[in-house]
Length: 433
Image (cartoon, rainbow, N blue to C red; front, side, top):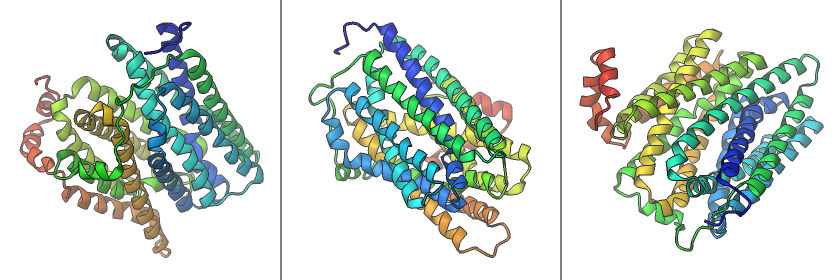
């Protein structure tokens, strides 16, 4: 460790809290409204949903291509100082498009791809920096409190942008509001840069501590392993899920005609479901239960589009999104723990980059399938509902034929746990081994 002499651990921790608030306020205020911005510029619902996912794919692909040069920078803090200002600059072309009042799906994919490349490149060095500079005895308290602050920041950002856009649209100032929001997002990234530069401790990774794995070596290491089966399942699962999930936000702002307040509340409720789900899982679930949790939440997620097709009632949609958030929290916790248990620390940056690429690749393929489905159904009265029904069948097929065979081995235990609600909760959240 090579901390700046003038910095104390208290400075470092407080700076990490402020950095988390800036970062996640930007998520709620700007990132959550990228699709709304594209619709306001005149792009179709399909183009908006497809552009977001393909931009993330471009970002992960770029991250892979530049992974080796990134790992060659020994200072974790310097990596953050490179990617933060680049991510801030990604807002500039968005503001220019707002001024010009025009955009194309290709331009949006390129600029948002640049944005996501820098965002994804920030995560590995940040987590490693915190792991090396925050004492082990303090980490649980640190991450719990920081997580609470960042969740609050997302909600505040969502609410502020939703209210501003709701008030600006009737006055004809919708695009001006978006430009103001993106400028604030730019400032948030600049504030984060100053926090990292002047208030964070540094850590230089010793030679040999981080190992670069090529994509071919990564794939070769997955053959006939449980991790390989899990990654294969997640790829196909994301293909089936994003055949419709990428179009739900455009569906709300387009065919359903939700205003920005209604949209903000739905997104906020979904995120709130993730927060509640994460809290419950973190307190109750145990490592040996991750396969059971993964089985249950993926089945529930597979059935979600059927619930979307039941009714357009706003209260019903709020319930569905809260329920969806609970299930996605379980999926994120289960997959992250299963991966964490099986990956060496020195290989973590390379492997998690490749896993992210595979998952986003599945999202891009699924989103493309959904776009083709919508394109070839021009005469169906409500093609979005048809897409949701198709997606649910597609998801169930992917679920049934999952290569993650442990799911099937878990069935006897699952049936034993569902013989009564009280007994199920008692068994499933048992505090045993």
